[in-house]
Length: 138
Picture 1 (tube, rainbow, N blue to C red):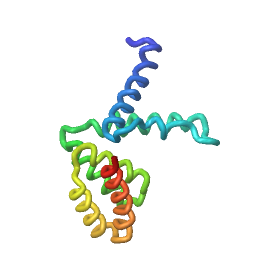
Picture 2: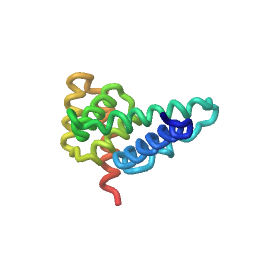
Picture 3: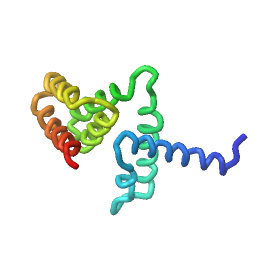
Picture 4: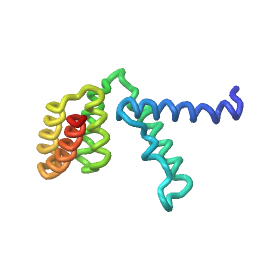
């Protein structure tokens, strides 16, 4: 049987581990996006914590059936298809950081163009070229 203190510490350690996984995949600490925004309700922090733990603590580490590189390319495809450009930027960074090539990512956008539309793919590819340029700097 666990004590209340142990039960309270378990989510904190899971959250910390999820944040560490996010940093490894993104190349930067995620906390800069998790702070409270003006007017945000108190339980907004719960949403951010739960979403972070689910994505980077529960789903991304699963590699028994889908390796991380493939999962990243799938995530790029989904974000591009949905047209969610800031999440796409993060998914592109993850894909590059876990070994996907720029050429593979370009192929993803060809696939998006066929099944989700050229305009949607072109808009997402513009984000990809910005992320590619980040890797060329420095």
